Length: 181
Image (tube, rainbow, N blue to C red; front, side, top):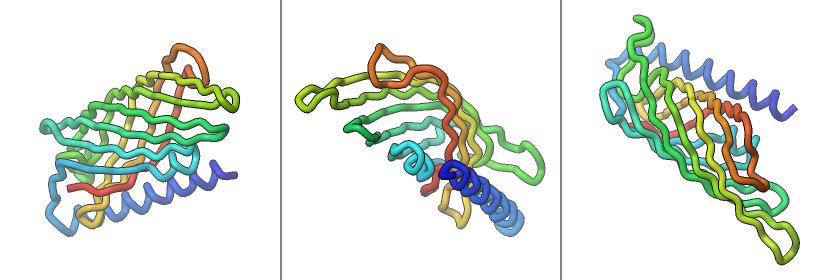
């Protein structure tokens, strides 16, 4: 039930963002955004992961992202992850969706280094490192000249030595919300 509610929330946010974005493009001159900082509340609710993403425009149609993630799960599992990615933006897909800077549809690779610490017994802890690699697809809306709303879908693979860390295929949808300038 929790996942159904979260999925409906994602769809509602995307629909409202698209409507406001199309309306604002028709009424004002488009502003070009070069930086953004966002977080994903859906990921926090589903996976107990608090993440912060910084994005910096590095060319006409591309950007670099940096991620910092704090993971606090059940059974005394805590962890931190750092990651990065590169995005290519597809501007001018249609006359109604002309974008520039770090707005619009983007795809690109990502990598994330994970560290987890979990309790085996009362006085014994294990440390585990992992690496996630994959691709992500996003569409960034900027409404009210500052609010960045970014639905995203990440497909990846978890690579690890052994231990608690999950390996294999990853499918991580989400919606990041934050500030763009």
